[in-house]
Image (cartoon, rainbow, N blue to C red; front, side, top):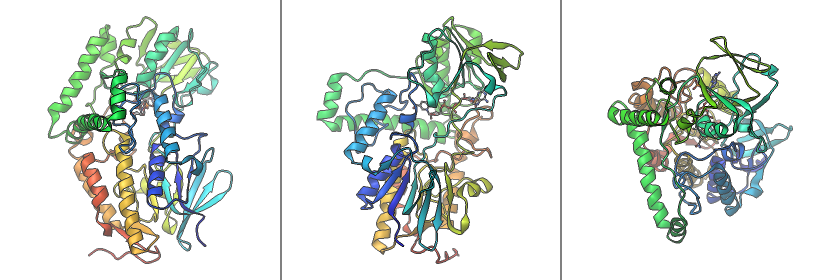
Length: 503
Ligand code: NAP
């Protein structure tokens, strides 16, 4: 039986939108995008806490083929990203393919029919030739199991479930977590709350954010002469690339650059925070880059306010009216903000149950073996499956470099399928192993293994202590691979034909 769809895409964030655009370009137009939320935009739909803004300059954090000359600032506020996602979806006429409020339970490869069966939470089953998971990296919010949290009588709010009409004015609030989200939110809460206690377990590196409104004249120039925005994108992307490739991936060879970034962050801290003890407590004791660095001109300064206090004693339990720390003190609060991030490695890889050939469960495979995916996109035993948010898939600092490289990978792979007149592909074990060996070897030079990351508690590392998230390549080389990977890294045709073992 022919499948109902050419393809099912899970997730209507920027990854899913890019994949959908590419499916249309490849002539696989009969697809559906399934989205558990009630609208598109992924991260930028879910997150709308005060202070939310992109922290990669907007000229780079956007599709290269769909520049937006209307960004109001160098680092656009979150709402503009959501609007941009809507604009792109409308321009490419993707909305009619999207089904919102549709939760995918899991997907199973049917070897007889050479197609995927995708099960939805409401019991419906869809069949499709290809399956693309675009479920994002940071899409499974995490709430730590603090003892007593259920007894808390005040307001609890996770940053991913912000209520826009919630007003912290006059409240005694606490925020748990000091990741990139808290760095944006703390200054906003500090301005309104009567008292704000910031519970920090691990300090974060913060460098100044070179942000400003984009003057109307420049926006007009970007609109009338798009090449000018392309130049701005190239300059900014090159700077980010240097930071990532030289400072993080080639840490061993270029320690001074990494050290310089750390010194810049320390100088920023020294000039921003008056109290010596607070400064000491805000100073990270792991190398710059072990954890995603953040950018802010307001975060450190918030700790100078008389209504803001930094708490570094670890959280023991939560009571009906406060938080008790290991030193025995209780901080009385009426509002608890959880900026505790996301669970990547336990529930996000993969975000849904995926059962491939021979009943292989992707989550179990990754956990029992090593987290792996050829070119960060395909896995042996999972035919006709593209996992867009895979181990070793994230390349560069802007997510859009990853998305666009994966779109190119799709172009080459599906082009070959058409050329051969086939409809099924599967990456070979050999190609997958070689890729894993290559990235493992390259990561040896990175800050993750060459630097001191022991106290970073970084989500770049999985439960086995492997830095299996970022692809250790320049984005240029990721693109090069995407358009030139050896075509015989895949098998084409029905998966019941066994793979010929390599000599
Ligand atoms: P995160 O970086 O994972 O931070 C979570 C915070 O919660 C950490 O400070 C963590 O402390 C703390 N935490 C977790 N469990 C805890 C516990 N049991 N006790 C005490 N503290 C606990 O999450 P995030 O801040 O939401 O940021 C995630 C990522 O989203 C960022 O790295 C970035 O990539 C992205 N992001 C981007 C933007 C942007 O571009 N505008 C904005 C926000 C976020 P430990 O460090 O000790 O674990």
